[in-house]
Picture 1: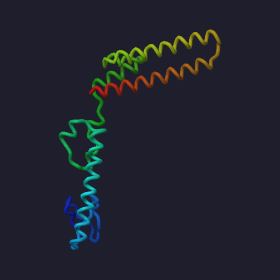
Picture 2: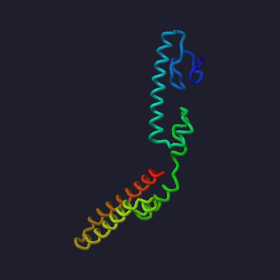
Picture 3: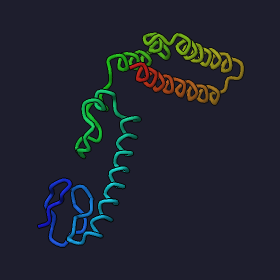
Length: 164
C-alpha cells in the first residue's frame, strides 16, 4: 500500500495518483518529485479557484466564514437548500394573487406592474371575446396570463432572495 502524503489515504501498490484527492503519489526519484509538487500546486490553485467560484456564486456568507475546507462532503451546505421566511411568504402571496408578494418585500412598483398586467389581460380578454366571439383569443390570452403569473411567482422568489 502506498500512503498519500497529502491526505493520508492508502492507495493500491503501483498507483500513480491518489484515489481520494487525485494528487500524484511521491516516488523515490527527486527530479520527478519536483515535477509532481509543481503539478500538485497547480491542482491546488485550480481547486481553490473552484471553491472560490462556488462560495461567491452559490454559498452563503456563514458557510464561507465558518468552513473553507475542501471536504468533498460539503460542496453545498445545508443552508443552500433552505428558504427564508421572507422568501416563503412573498412567494406564497404571489401564488395567491400575482403581485401581492412584492408588496410584502416592499417592491411596490413591481407589484403594481404585475397586478395591472394581470387585470389588463383579464379585461382585454373579456372585451375581445365579446367583440369577436372567438375562443382562440380566450385561449391565447389565458396562456399569456398564465405566463405572467408564473413569471411573477419566480421573480418574487428571486427578489426576496436578493434581499436576504
